[in-house]
Structures are given as structure tokens and as C-alpha cells.
Image (cartoon, rainbow, N blue to C red):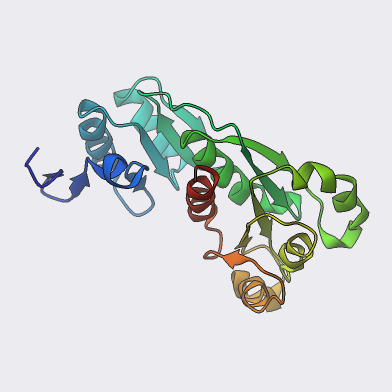
Length: 221
């Protein structure tokens, strides 16, 4: 490793000191990369003492990674894989992830795995969308105990605004690509969340990782 803090390979520059610099290690976005490259990147990070999280990992790629790297934990729903060498101290406060429907689970699981990897206590409250809003009200006191709330919703994305209007904690909204034609693969939910009259922040479509990463920073303030 050079003094500039990254290791240069033929196809990548691995930021080995990101965790010391920002509090969170570099994360490997695996979609679009050959498995061979992902394995090499992860091996170099492990050799330099880093915890490693890979996102958007297919089952076939995970199988190849697990042949070369031991002690990995793979979540096929989240499509995440991680190796924990240095177990972080868990936060006293916690993050709650609220989802509108069962179809949003892949994004929920990506957010959950990321938040746990980063050392947070996390709770999930699933399938409480506005079509049966009484289900949300039954869980409201539990939601209000969180330090940060992530709301995952597709269709028209209304759940995020409803939750944000009922709590006094930061709300991070994640639009999902779940929905029929006019949902436009998540664009309708994204625009609804961006136009909310409540106080919330919005990440990109299906970006459970981004929501959890930001929620972790807030939770650790």
C-alpha cells in the first residue's frame, strides 16, 4: 500500500483507509463486475485488515466468492455478502426499517444487512403500507423509539410521508421499483417522496444501501 492510502490494481484503486477517514469502510458494488475482480478486491481488503461488504451480489457470484474466501455471510434476498474481521461495538440506539409491502423485501434486506454490518442495532417492521394503515398504527410506538427511521415503499410511495408526519425522528425514504406501469420502475414513488410536505430525506430508487449508510451516520452522532 502506498502512503496515499489506496492500493492500485490493474482494474481498481482500493480505498483501504476509508473507514479511518470517514467511519465507514469501502463497500464493493458487485453488479457489472466479473467475479474474479470482486474476489481479488475483497482479498486485498481482507489482507489489509478491513471488514468487507459486497452489494448486488448474484447467487452464482456468491458461490464463487465463497470458494475463495471463507467465513462469508450471504443474504440471497438482499444480495449482500460480508466478511467481518473486526466486530464493531453495537450502538445503544437503534434504526427501524419500515416497509410498505412484501415485494419491497429485497430493498429492506439490503438496508438491514448494511446497517448491521456498520454496527447498528436494527429492527424491521414489515408490510404496513397505507392500504391497511391500521397495521402501521399498531406499530407506531415501537417506531417512535428509533433514533432514525428508514421507510421503504413502492407504488406511489405514500408511506414515507405518513410516517414522517407522525414521528419526531429523522426519516430516510427509499422509493422502490415495485408497482404497475405508471410507477415507471420507481420514478413515481421517487417524485412523490421528493414532493412530500413532511420533513424527510430521499435516496435513489432501490438504494437500501445508501439509506442504511446515512442512517448509520445519524445513529452514531
